[in-house]
Image (cartoon, rainbow, N blue to C red):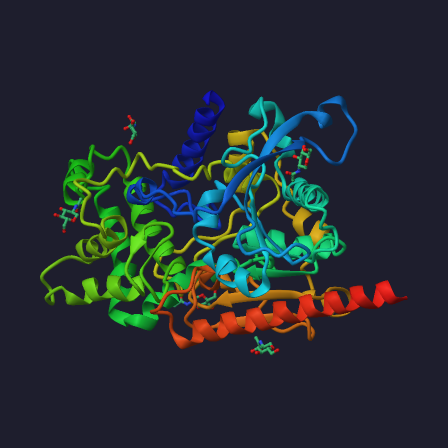
Length: 497
Ligand SMILES: *[C@@H]1O[C@H](CO)[C@@H](O)[C@H](O)[C@H]1NC(C)=O
Ligand SMILES: *[C@@H]1O[C@H](CO)[C@@H](O)[C@H](O)[C@H]1NC(C)=O
Ligand SMILES: *[C@@H]1O[C@H](CO)[C@@H](O)[C@H](O)[C@H]1NC(C)=O
Ligand SMILES: *[C@@H]1O[C@H](CO)[C@@H](O)[C@H](O)[C@H]1NC(C)=O
Ligand SMILES: *[C@@H]1O[C@H](CO)[C@@H](O)[C@H](O)[C@H]1NC(C)=O
């Protein structure tokens, strides 16, 4: 626990140092976002009754043979055999950077399709997150990386199949965001364990400048601009008005009052971060139906935010006031917030260790261009390296992910090497530009929707789902069905030979 709070302090330091000069938190962005709405934390994830929780003893280290490699931690997984026919497929979610219940309760798609396939459904928690934490965290952090996580999944799946006496069952892996990257990489690294992968909103090309570093903030900005140019302009102009509070007497107190903060702001940077997060996170979860992933929000929340901004009478309020009112939709949609706790954000799903991953292997360069509605900034590799050294005492390896998993000239490479991966993306999602957006071969398929957001397709179906979303899921099901049929047909063939 103490280690946790030290880490949280370091993360805070990380943000504070970066944002001190009233700039955006450069490069601190992360597939989900550390900044969670308090309301979301209060709502307990709803998992169907037929899920069981299990813990699997896992070695701390899979790649060397030191005494400490054999240290055990207990890896949590959730399992439902409710729809399973013995010998039938196994659907595995390769967990990402938070507690596994959170992902399980936002990945209803797997359960929706399980009856059709009579599939076993398993959600595995990623090491170092949720309850799957080794002891002596400070000394074992070096074992937190994506390769160890993939090996965990491989070992757990093999053990599970053995225990179920169902070794011939085909395994399909699923994941969204970082979990989607893991699903895709798992298929490439462990083709003998998974027959295919659905990688939703997986920005595997966000590394090593394969995608433009400004694409993330540019996409958020475009989402708002597509709804209303005025909305985009108001937000763009609000940052200067916010910065002006730096120069006026008692600026922090005045802004605290305006922004209804619970306590007087220590720095204007936290107000800036608060505003920015509201727009970024809302773009990520710009779902076509009401949802509660990062926060409870209505359908198409970007539109709703712009309605608020555009709804102000002309000239009656500052741009900053309008931007603040729009951001309040994200933090106070339920209407139950008495004040905003901008400098004490909660981390209900335990995302903090992502800071370590972002400082070691998950190095995704970020910048903000002049196309963006956010203040422009350049990508600053050196500055970030210094911060990582300060926060964790580690040196980043910005080229490691592309060395280990590839990415450069991916179309050419995977055309002749890989198979059975679906890369699904929604173009509203700021991470989509780092995803695979083109078909690579007839079994490495890109399913792209214009109106989709961050792994929209993995959410449970609702009766309000638009036709494009139903169609995307129909295609996914048809492709997965094809993989499974081919697998069983190959298996029969093998048995006959
Ligand atoms: C399989 O069974 C063994 C022996 O009971 C157990 O230790 C292990 O945790 C089980 N594997 C999984 C994935 O639950
Ligand atoms: C949250 O919304 C409610 C209902 O609209 C409002 O009364 C309250 O002042 C809002 N809270 C903040 C901090 O703005
Ligand atoms: C932050 O919030 C938590 C609970 O919401 C509270 O216990 C803690 O005292 C707060 N810390 C500060 C510095 O305000
Ligand atoms: C925006 O940035 C581009 C590329 O850096 C540059 O060519 C262009 O002149 C800039 N436009 C403005 C209005 O600053
Ligand atoms: C990839 O191919 C599928 C058909 O197999 C098609 O539906 C889809 O639109 C293609 N994706 C792209 C990005 O062109």
